[in-house]
Length: 124
Image 1 (spheres, one colour):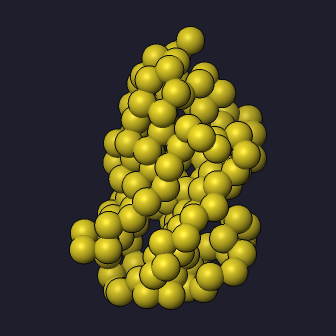
Image 2: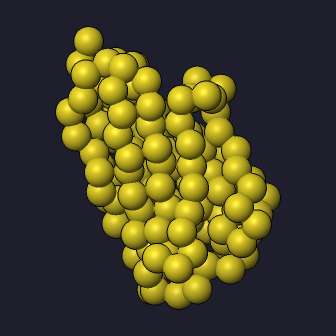
């Protein structure tokens, strides 16, 4: 059974940085896409970034381009989200997710497995 566990959230001032981790277990992830989503209070969950586990190719949403970087360490079965120059509007619960496949990584409905989420709060 696939398990995803996020860590690394916290409180940071605007302009600061955080690195989120998503530890994955339960199987080999060849052929999987893994992604980060976030949900701010009162808003729907939105796509942040995704990565093809095997090839390492990445996609991210326009609002985080140039500030956030998604990556993965195959040896550690861990995915990361490096977040720099954080803004108050980045405040949200960040969740990692995974599915078998390489198409549709921007769509929440594609993902079968989800972590519990980690809170990121950016103060102004």
